[in-house]
Image (cartoon, rainbow, N blue to C red; front, side):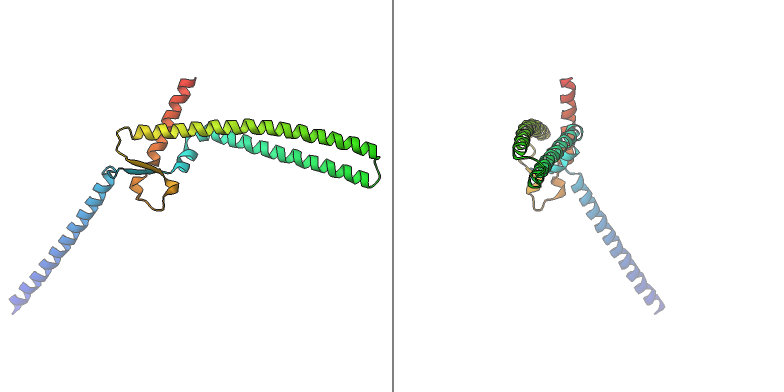
Length: 198
């Protein structure tokens, strides 16, 4: 009886160890499969790029885009200040005239001066706005060119049948994201362009 209990106990322990070994093997196999999938290249023929991320992290944006954005913001603030000053001067002139502190003739002369100033301001603002618009267009064209060249270089072996902008995605496997590769290539191309322009 004692031997039977020992034998049963040995079988239970062996079965438990065997089950535990099978679970460990299954877990190890699952981990290996996951690791292999992570190491395997993207074979789906699909990829996506987070264009906004690439643009904002690019050397082109950090060296030239930020400065252009600051220049645009300063110009807009300057325009707003000048417009506000002009409106204040018009309001002061009207107040003086209503209080009888200035003659009608003087008020008309001052109003003409303010209108001339407003026209000059509008012309200057329009000219500066056109220059900024052109600079922004050139910057955006350069960014688009670098982005396209980067993607073409990465996909020179035609491994991707479709590369899309991540902003159009609702859901995607992160392994299809080539944004960091595009960023690195874009930065390298930017550096090459900078050297060739010097």
